[in-house]
Length: 297
Image (cartoon, rainbow, N blue to C red; front, side):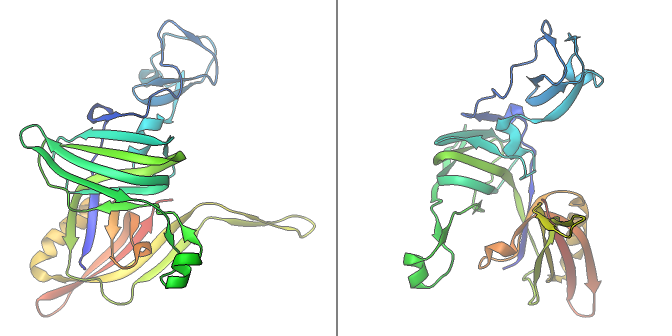
C-alpha cells in the first residue's frame, strides 16, 4: 500500500454537539468571588484561580488572576493529544458539523468501547454513509488455539477511510461502551497518499521516558513513564509528484497527523509528526523519500 497521511481538521466547540455534558466545574460568574485554586469553566476551558478575592476578572483576559488548566472533558478527544481523554459511561454520541470536507475518521487510544456507529448526513442529500463497527476484544495471536483459549486484548483504535467528501456535511459518532470508557483522539481529516509503496526495511521502536533511580544503599527503583513510538522507513515516489510531496511534508512540520504504513501490521501505524525527511532524486522516473516519524506521548 502507499503511505497514507491524514492531517486533522480543527473541531471547535461551535462545530460540536455531544451527549457528554460540560459539567467539569461550575461556569464562571462575574458576580462570584473565587479563592485561590478554585476552578471554573469558561469558553469550554477549565481555569484555576491564582489568587483569593477574585471577582469580576474574566479568565481569558486576566492572566494574573487565572491560569488555563486544559479543555473540558467533552473537548479532550479533539485537542490533538491522546494523553487527555474524553471519559463517559455506557454510551455517548458526538455530532460534528463540518465546514469543509473530510474523507477519513479515526478513533485512537480508546478504552471500554463495544461498538461504534458512524453516520454522514447532508442537509440537501440526506443520509450519505452509515457503518457500524464492533470493537470487541481480539486474540493476541493468529492461530486457532489462541483465538479460542488464549489471552485477548481490547481494540483501542478504529480507522475509516471511505467517508463521502461533501462540504457542509454532518458526522455523527454513536458509541456503545462499558461503565468506564474513554477516547484519546477523535480525528477527522482528508487522507492523502504519498508514493506507491513502503520499501522493505521498516524500522520500528520506542523512545522510553522511564527512569531507573538508585538510592544511597544501592536499591534500584524503576519509574515507569510514557513513551513515544518511532518509525523509520523509505517510500518510492514518482518524480512527477516530487514538488507536491515536498510541499505536503513541509506543511506537516510540527503538526500531529495519522500516518498509515501498513494494512497488515497495525502497530506500524503511528499518530505523531515527521521529525525528519529527505528526498533523494536519482536517475530515472523515481525518487526515494526517507522519513522518520515520532509518535506523540
